[in-house]
Length: 286
Image (cartoon, rainbow, N blue to C red; front, side, top):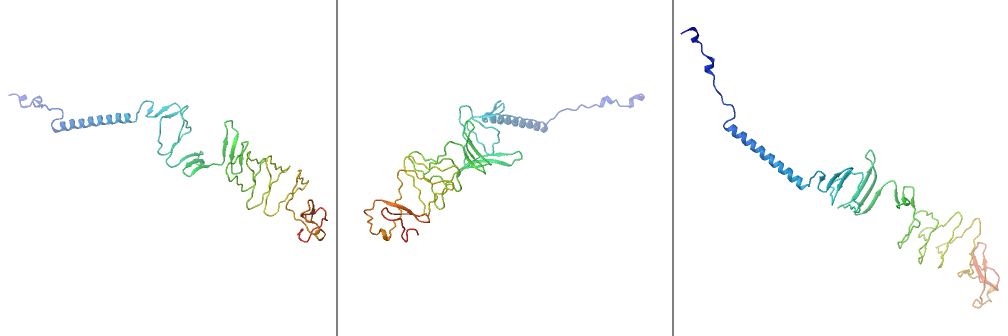
């Protein structure tokens, strides 16, 4: 044998190996792939079911449709918390209705989030919180306006239809107080005085009935720069006291048809028979 026969040939010792996954590892991999496939199918089915239930489409979800400039809600819509919007209106020729199980509130806030105005409609009534409140007609004319300084009624007539009338704690400035045709007009102060004044004049007129003024103590008619005129063909003073002096004792009151009106120094009026003298007795001028 030669010298080269003692060395081994490297190509004679090459071994072959199998490439891949075999046995239980292969079965686990197939099982994992099957589970992932089932999860994908279930998720896809749930997604399709949710889209079907919500009526999801390219325009929106159910009755909610997204349009240019906002959204459109058709049918009844339930708001569970707060609704923030800059403009709310109904469809053309359709009414809009707001319903709440407790109360309905509309709030307006400023740029920093502070509450400026609030309207609350609840079981106890309507409450409005604002610096001013104004009601106008369709032409923009103010019909009613209320502010901390004054309350303005811009209508031609303010009509109070309650049986108790209108009660004012302070003063009232108006050019005319008028009752409806066939109704009585009554100005009354239950526990205090009633004063009617005007810079140019006060006119009290009744076109189809009587005018009566009643008070507990004194009724004063005062004119500082003019006179008090009673213009009527019949002026009656039925309750003036009749003075009876010694010179008038022989006069029979039954036969007396005319009396003369006399005045005390205090301004109190009394009457005496026309045939007698205008002399007061001891108690007439007291």
